[in-house]
Image (tube, rainbow, N blue to C red):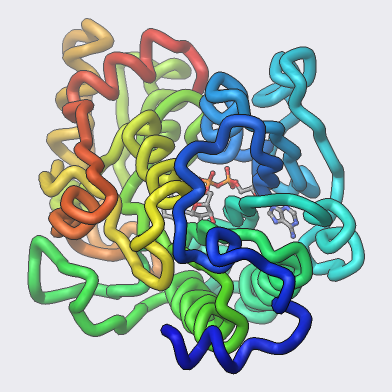
Length: 336
Ligand SMILES: NC(=O)c1ccc[n+]([C@@H]2O[C@H](COP(=O)([O-])OP(=O)(O)OC[C@H]3O[C@@H](n4cnc5c(N)ncnc54)[C@H](O)[C@@H]3O)[C@@H](O)[C@H]2O)c1
C-alpha cells in the first residue's frame, strides 16, 4: 500500500490520508454522494436511506429502466436529479465533481438482453463503468461498485465464497467481471478506494425480475401461474433493506477498500417454493402452478447461494429479513 501511495502522481499530493483510504468516512452525514442508477430499484431505495442519514444525494440516471415515480417524493427531501448517461464521460464527470462517494449502480441488468446484444451490454456496463471510474479519479471519490453473483457462473461450491473462481456463463456476468478488474486497476494505480459488492437476488419495493413477474401474473389471473423453467432453479433472495445496509457499510468501512463482498442471506429458495409461499401469503386458493420445463432463459444460473461470512465479518453486516418476511413486506407495500 505504501509503495502504491508513494507512486501516486502530484495530482494527489494535496490529498490527506483520510481521502486516500487510511482513515474511514465514518458516516455519510453531510457528505456529497452520487448514486448512478439512482432511479432504479436498488438505487431508489438506497437514496431514501441516504437522505434519512443526512447525506447530500444526487441521482445520475438516464431513465433507461429507472422511473421518476420511484424518486419523485425524494425531490422534496433534497434529492438532486441529473438526467445523464454514464456512456458520456463529460456528463458523469460534471455530476460527480466535488463528491465524496459514488455508488455506481447504473447498468443494463438483463441477462437475456446481454445474450442478444453483447455489444450494447458492453458499452452500457463496461464503457459506462470506465467513465465512472475516470470521474471518481478526478473527484477523488470513494466508489462502491455493484457487481453481481453472476460473475461465478454456475459454481460447484455452494455456498459460494468470494475466492471461488469467476467463470461467468452470460455476457452480463462477463461485463460485471471486467468492470471489477477495472476497479482493481484504478485502486492499484491511483490509490482510489473501491469496494466491489456482489449482490445475489435482491427483492423489495420497486423490484423487477421473477418475484415481480409472478406477482403481476397472479394479479392478472389469481387462478393460474406459469413459471418458466423446471421450478428447481433456486435463488439466494436478499431483501432490499439488507442490501442497502451492506452498500452503506461498504462506503464507510475503511478496510473494505479493494475487497469484493457477497451480499446474500446464505439460504436458497427454489422457484417452486417461491410460488407456493407467494400464493400462501396472498391467501389464494386452488392456483394451478405449472412449469414450462427446460432452461428458463439462455445464461440462467441453476442455484445461487452466498457464502456471506466475509461481509458479516469485515463489514459488520448481518442480513435481518427472512424470505417469507421480505416477501410479505413487498406484497404489503404494493410497490410492484
Ligand atoms: N436486482 C438484483 O437482484 C441485482 C443483483 C445483482 C446485481 N445487481 C446490480 O445492482 C445494480 C442496480 O440494479 P437494479 O436491480 O436496481 O437495476 P435497475 O435496472 O432497476 O437499475 C439500474 C438503473 O441504471 C440506470 N441506467 C442504465 N443504463 C444507464 C446509463 N447508461 N446511464 C445512466 N443510467 C443508466 C437505469 O435507468 C436504472 O435506473 C445494477 O448494477 C445491477 O447489475 C442487481
